[in-house]
Length: 268
Image 1 (spheres, rainbow, N blue to C red):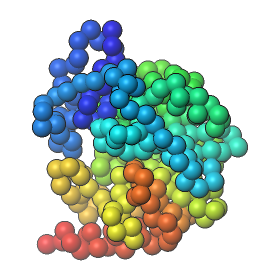
Image 2: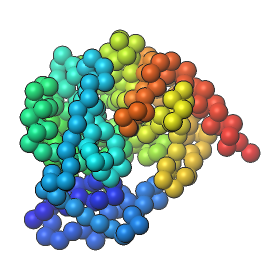
Image 3: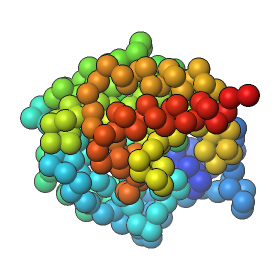
Image 4: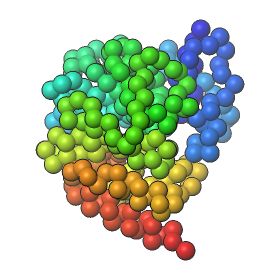
């Protein structure tokens, strides 16, 4: 049996004799079915067509992205701590070269993912490195490949190791989470946010949406909840979901002014 992969969102499903009838993540109103209809691929096909690249983004933080880009095109972030490494926002492609490179960097102790659009091949990655996967319990219905490596947490925050903390923000998904990395930005602190707090083209700002491809905004209440969730934490930098989507400095103020601008724009 083959663990088929949705070509549009990159999610790997539990092994089956035939491709699934549809991808529930893409059928959800926050995502979409591609113009060519539901399409499937496999890890072997991806390994023949693509490769991963590694970039040092700052001390203790390495980006891992696939080229040519696949599915949503996010890159993962490997956070290095004295107590082990955490992979943030998984990507689909995993091959021998990637496994060897990650092992050289200290392996992966745990994986945490902002929301279901980036679940990709998380189980494949977890098995390769003996890692645990930390997801908010609200997102369990969106897990297409259940596995004992997945640990669901409840509540609003979840301390991990090396000073890392998961923060439930909601918004884009009810259990959407971001990662606080206190050692980031030369010790000033960083948030790794995927597109829960989305770094936009004008990197002085961020934004918030219920659906990005379908342009469905969030209500003011949800935006205020996101801002309140990260307010207790010190951070000067935000890493979004893609290579160049980074607020380099003054990120906490950027979140505040962006929320104010957003709420003013949707007000009646």
